[in-house]
Amino acid sequence: GAVVSQHPSRVICKSGTSVKIECRSLDFQATTMFWYRQFPKKSLMLMATSNEGSKATYEQGVEKDKFLINHASLTLSTLTVTSAHPEDSSFYICSALTSGSSFFGPGTRLTVL
Amino acid sequence: GNSVTQMEGPVTLSEEAFLTINCTYTATGYPSLFWYVQYPGEGLQLLLKATKADDKGSNKGFEATYRKETTSFHLEKGSVQVSDSAVYFCALRSGGSNYKLTFGKGTLLTVNP
Image (cartoon, rainbow over all chains, first blue to last red):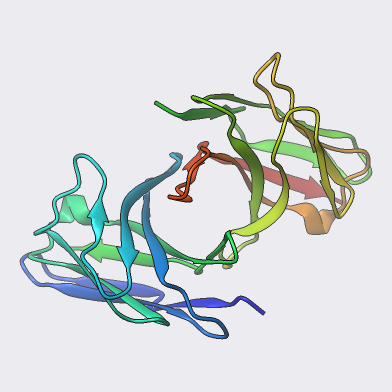
């Protein structure tokens, strides 16, 4: 139980385009999901907390207009990287919270050319 | 603010060797401490946790003890296996209801037969 999926697993896009990443809790409902960004040889950096039915809470230094988060249902949160640039290339990981524990998706590798 | 420092990798061991991955933390209050493991191509999985001082978390032969006096949560295993090859992340979560995790940079462990 407590499986979290992400789609796509890898995406390559051109600079200036927008990319949407989905995070789904497959066998449980999650009112709270988290989005992380992981740079090579660095820790996971929390970007934002996604709350079902309300606005996301962004960490300091994360541009909310750049990284749009929508948590429209209890099993789905989406992260849209708008007008992507090469510096947005990274590994994006989501987690979903249930019963006080966080369960992680496998991550999405974004490469912006 | 909160921070987690874990030993730099990579760590390469032979099968049946003893493993220690050091982790120290800085946090306000009384955090909960975690070790997560990420196997190749998979998402992070909770390996073990401890919620108060002197607690010992254990799972799959791995152990870590919450040491408040040294602000440490070192991961140990007496005899590693090839299947233990993965990236290990130390993390903390402060008290309160936001459930945000702060991660270390991760340590890559490779176990050779």
